[in-house]
Image (cartoon, rainbow, N blue to C red; front, top):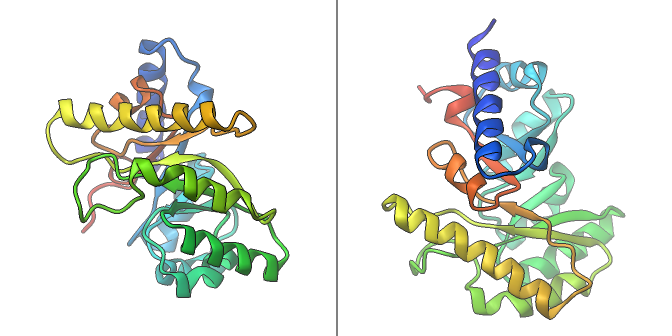
Length: 226
């Protein structure tokens, strides 16, 4: 068994155990294998091991990798500049990092031009740190409205990157994202915001206990970057 296969099995076991502790079903949780800086052979090994969803931070890196790799559902999880919206529509199945109405509009225009519907998540800054990526919680209604204006964008939920502080602060970030989702759904009962993308290699079990339905895991699957 390769290291990646072994790591994948361990991650799946940990996800299952975290779900059971929270009284949840493991199949409620999607694991996105974050493959930034990883060579194509590692990504192919992950797909062979059972990975179904792949996460990439940069459009440029996906441009180099995607044509060489068959399979997988690809998520853009890093920040996206508006001038790269067209390439993102071409390369990815889901953009998790929509954080402004202007970016949403650019993606909608590019998706319409490509005649494809894009899945998107709104990235929320739950840490309150000024330079952190993501929309502020009070900006979410306007941003959701902009996404809903376009039939070419399908809003599935919210994403956040927790603060790198102590466990109490990480937990607060996860609780904040869940509260943001609940508030949006209360205002717009026609929305299905079932996806909460939160949790990475160091905190995904805590995220699952706080309601995450999608975890983004790199190091625990692929190993430490050389």
